Amino acid sequence: MKILLIEDDMDLGNGIRIALTDQGMDVTWVRQLADAQRQLEQRGFDLLLLDLGLPDGNGMDLVASLRRGREGVPILILSARDALSDRLLGLDSGADDYLVKPFELAELLSRVRALARRSYGFDGETMELRGIVLHVPTRRVTVNGRPADLTGSEYELLRILMMRADRVVTRRSLEEQALPGSQANASNSLDVHMANLRRKVGEGLIRTVRGVGYVIDQREVGR
Image: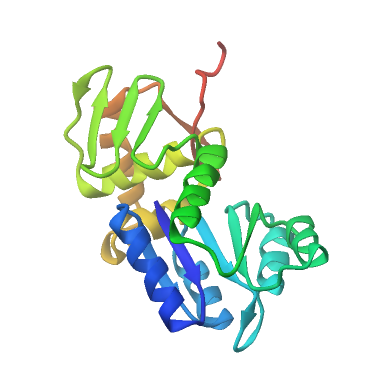
């Protein structure tokens, strides 16, 4: 799971980064809103951990901006603002959860896992969907119980689509997240990788949404 951590406190940020990385999560840590916005423009993330009191602005502005743009990435606010009005404002503005500082890292990890389950049906290690089992720590994939030999890019494409089951992922988002720069710049690179992935996991799993991108439906269309 790819997490963007936006926290300006050095000790807390480093502690969170280490704790999440030890759980097998891919963490990008920034300390300012401007850096967070650049990261969000360049990469796709599965979850945001967001401090509100940042050196260059209020984290609530980022929440509002993402929700106005219909960006559905789950957001967990981390803040020392513990008044009920602050918590309600955060949740009503579009955050999915709110954790008051100081907190135990064990509780943060538990909330991250719970948010991943609610948002993606992901338990932190394994995703299962329509006969496909993806084990994140080992990057192993099986199709109806049989191992599938995927390349790194094919694995990332499958992981992203499974994490967002029933939601269309745009071509641009898939290229930015799953394909290295030189590959993403090739006009048909995504199509080639997707064709190879379909051959390995079964032609009926990944559905093309013409002019937009791709989606994996939790249930086969028509059933």
